[in-house]
Image (cartoon, rainbow over all chains, first blue to last red):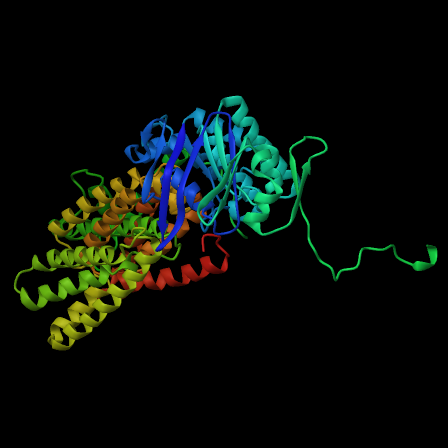
Length: 274
Length: 342
């Protein structure tokens, strides 16, 4: 599907990504985790051609990425990045409909077909934005805007999703909904997703594979159980964590251990009723 | 009022809006052709304009109507179309609702070209619009080259380059003005403020050709512009050929502004206010905004020019003064209304 082969990316006279390889396969979700500045987002941007690798290449459906027209790439790869910076009045529906740009079926003068409209409406329904269609994008909260961005990506009908911290502004409920949506999209349509995230527990829960990065390099790449180990996480984040299994799902559960000696343990109020 | 809610734009709505605006344009055209320093009889003029023969117009009145008035009104319309469409395009391309066609040095380039024509080719009448146009294109080219960086000519770099070129050319204009003689300065100053009294059929042809080519090129890229307006990276991700669209839109908009300035000098505020009004009324979809602004812009300048010709008749005001007098307060009103496009 989509593959990065030994890519190195020089960015602003700094090596952002060093010799990283990644393979995106149908129905698989890959999470990329690591500290800030590890090169995760840069790697993601290289996967759809936004950034050109200095060494190595990105292969899409067995051909080098550069050989494709932008439109074709847009049809096959969709990006969910940080919420859009919108300075013009755009409704949620118009925004989501924009995801149909790359699709081939447009009427004369470039107007969307009924199918495009239907797909946009479905995407809005899937992201629980029904009722928001006529609202202006810049009137929405950060989390709602993020869902609109996801809806737009879903509307593209792409098979590969690249998500850059999609749960950043979402409340607990919507974090779960978003990842569940991506997960079910991948499972039901053999799509694939690469998710850059800071939330290691969500990564553990929803991905098939995890790539742990630090300073542009791949520290570990494998199943969540293999990669999310106490030693590897300590090595990368310099943080003491406890890894056990989630009581319900069995997925690795990562709990940071904060050694805060000066804070007394919480005690009940009023000492009289001891 | 934060912003109006708009239903999704579709082809039918666009055609409907454009048809309505076109009717307004026709009305403005008819009225403007009839009004003027030389009062023509209303019935006679209307009759002649609608193509009938045997109207109660003298030969002289006919000549005024068809040889002077109508071409001038048409040129006003063409200038308005060019400026409003270019304004809409610049605002979308630069992702800045305050972008004006003159932000990118085009008008100053045309002014320098005109001055060069007056100074060096004063005898040849045709040299003025040709050199104005050449100046506009050269300035545009300079701005684009200056703005090219690693990530291409991003909106920020374009604006910066535009400001640099504009200020540089302004000083060039001041320099040349000091070596110009007094009579030339006066006519030049008037022209600089926007002056449609020098309408010739050649100018009209050029303006029409430019308007047609430019507006069509913009409309063809309107959908891509919709996405680029929301962020170039997003547009790229969604499949837009960003650098190509940017180049085409920039070139088309510059063609429009260059032709307009060559024909009539710098008519200000049209490119700023008309797209705003259109967006406020009908939404930001460029597939509607660009053609609607093109038509509404024509009407706007026709009205302004009518006022310029009649307010202190038989003398004339520069049309740019009228567009500024109408446009500036209108823009303040838009700002205060809390138009969410600013």
